[in-house]
Amino acid sequence: MGSSGQPLTSIEICAGAGGQAVGLHQAGFRHLALVEIDRHAAGTLELNVIEKKRWGAAAAAECDVLEMDVTKFDPTVHMKKFIARENRPLRKGELGLLAGGVPCPPFSVAGKQLGRDDERDLFPTMLDLVDELKPRAVMIENVAGLVKPRDKFFGYREEIKTRLRDAGYVVCGWRLLEAADYGVPQLRPRAILVAIREDQYRGFEWPAPRKERVTVAVALEASMKRRFVDAGRPEGFHKWLEDAGAGGVAPTLVGGSKKHGGADLGPTRAKRAWAALGVNGMGVANDEHEVNLDRDLGSLQKGLGPMLTVEQAAIIQGFPEKSEWEFAGRKTARYRQVGNAFPPPVAAAVGRAIKEALEREGAVLEQPQHEEPDGTTWDLAQISLL
Image (cartoon, rainbow, N blue to C red; front, side):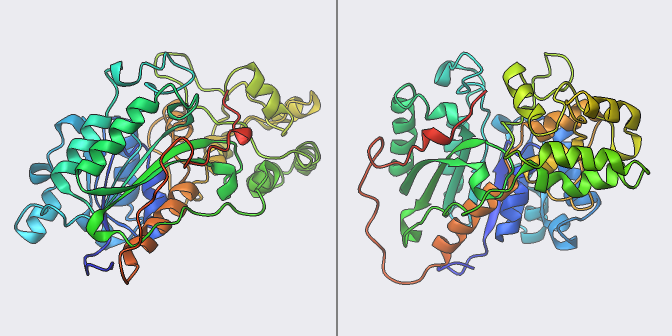
C-alpha cells in the first residue's frame, strides 16, 4: 500500500518471457495484466503464472496473460479478470505501475537505429496508455543504444519526457544501469526511465550498485556440478571449474532473431569472451538430463568448455531456478526468450525503489532540477556492447 492507500498493482506491456515481471513481483507488485505478442513468450507467462501458479493462486486468479499486439490492447475490454471481479473496468489513476520493455531494435547498436522512424517503435503506444490509465508510476526499459551515443536520440528522449510531464508526471530521468552491478553475472547495460505522478511524488532514489559482482563460475557451479558429477564424470566438473574459476562476468547474452539461424552466444568477439569463462559459445546444449557428456569432455580438453543449457543461460540472466520459472517451446525458442529478457534482479532493484517512493509519507519533496545530459549518470566505461 502507498500513501494513497491503493494496492501496488501493475500492468506490463511487451512482457516477453517475464524477466521484468519476475523482478517486479519480487519487489512486491501485483500484476493485473501481462501483454505479449510472441506466442512462445506468452506461453511461458501462461505456464508459470496461470497453470503452475508460481506466484500463488491469488495471482493466477487476478492476472490476465494476453497474447496480443499491444497496439490493440484496451484495458477496459481485455482485462476480463479485473472486470469480472470488480464489476467495472480499471479506473483512471487506480493502477500502481505501468511497466514495459518496448521493442529494442529501433535503438539497438546492432540494428539501423531508426528510432521513431522504425515501425516497431512502441513508445507512442506506451505513452498513450499512460494518458489512458494515469498510473501512479511508470517504468520503461530499453537497450543502452537509446542513450549511447548520447546525442543521437536526445531529442526523442526529450519528447518522451515532455509528454510525461504534460501528463502530470515527475520524470526521474533516464538512467543507464549495468546488470552486473545488481547480482547478474553478465555485462548487460539497460536504459531505464522512471516517472512518478505529481500527486504521488515524495522523492525517488535510484538503486545503489552492489559492492561485489557475481562471477559466471559462482553462478554456474551448482548446475555444472549436477551436470558432470551426478552423471559420474567428476573430472569434467573439476576441469570446468579450473578453467572458469579465474574469469569474471559474462559478455552480453544475445537472443538472436527469428530470421537468422539457430541459437548461439553471439559474434566471434563474444565467443572468445565466453571461452575464457569456460563456456563454448558455438551453440546451446540440450537440457541437463540430455547433454552429450562425451562431447562436453572433448570440448573441455580443447579449452572451449561445455555449451550452456537453456536453464544455465537463464541463470546468467538472473532468472530463478527452473523449479520456480521455466520456459515454453522448443530449445531455440526457449533460448531466444532467455537471451532477449530483462534481467529480473535489475527489475527487482528498480521496482523496490519505485515501491519505496510510492510508500513514502510526508510533504512533497522538491522535484529533480537537473536534466540530461548533465544531470544523468552515464557510466559508459562499464558498457560492453557486442
